Amino acid sequence: MTFPLLNQPARLFWLLQDGGWLAYFALNYLAAIGYGKPWQYVYVSLSSAVFGFVITSFLRYGYRRVIALPTPRMLALATVMMLLATAVYAKVFAEVVFGYCFDCRPSSVFGYIGYFGSALYVMLSWSGLYFGIKWGQQLTRERETALKATAMAHEAQLKMLRYQLNPHFLFNTLNAISTLILDQQGATANRMVTGLSGFLRHTLDSDPMQRVTLGEELSALDRYLGIEQLRFGERLKVSIEVSEAARQAEVPSLILQPLIENCIKYAVSKRADGGGIAVAADVRDGMLEMSVRDDGPGSADECRSGNGHGVGLNNTRERLRVLFGERQSVTVRNLEPRGLEVLLRIPYQHARREREA
Image 1 (cartoon, rainbow, N blue to C red):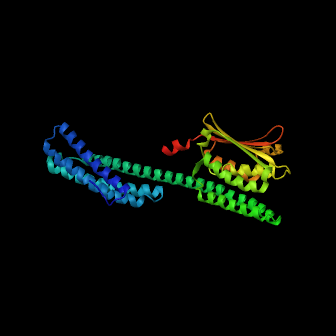
Image 2: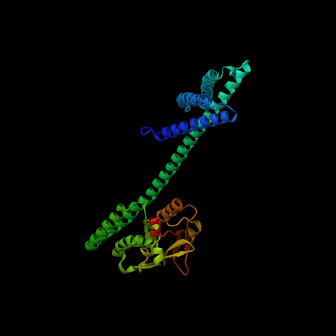
Image 3: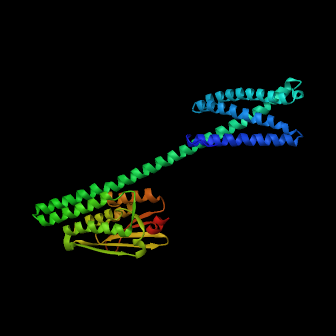
């Protein structure tokens, strides 16, 4: 039997209702044949199953009205409805049996209690299955709702952290442009505005929830470094050493930019002769390792505290924590004789294989 206009829970109920009472009819009739009943007993078994189907169908509507009530009240009302349904079913079943076999009528009240007990067993079993399936479905929906809420919270948190980078970077770049204008370097300021426009267009067009390959991340980093190169010229020296396997790895977008920005702020801009930045990445033991180094003065206190360089590093720590949980690490350490290194370790995921999967 199909119910094209019914929703999924209703279709499941009627499928189980049909199948359950059909199985009840078959078992009841086979048991009667096993006890030596003639084939005509099929009418008793069939009548019993049909009346059971009708009564429990009405009982379902009663249960649906009380299932959302507080548990004590719901149990009390459900018990009353089940006992009424049992009484009706026992009466109908007994009359059917008596019509088939007049001598089967009990000679004492205990016989009628036996009929009622058999009917109660059937109704109790049906009710237990109904509430068990109903509560199981409700628990599944609540679990799915909780998982969706958690996923949405994580997504909102990641978007907040990702978009936090734009105003932070924009503030620093606009200050640099303002300085160039005050120094009457209009042509350089114009090129920086053009570079800034291209970089912001790239960051705004990219989905903050979508990961990119490290190769694509380095391309975006080139846009950013192009802007900074206009500010510092030969004072800014950058080297990049990334293995081919690392270039194919999936990483969160703009994961390196705030670290490079910290290097420029603390190791390049404060020194008259500028400074150097080294970016490296490789795959080791199933983990993608990305390091950003500078040759600035370092920061022993910040390394010990783990606080890092303000917004940029804290943002990176939080993004990786939300995305990878305990399967990631951010390590900050001083270098000898000078400089600072930030090392990121995340699970290695090959972009092409992940997308094919």
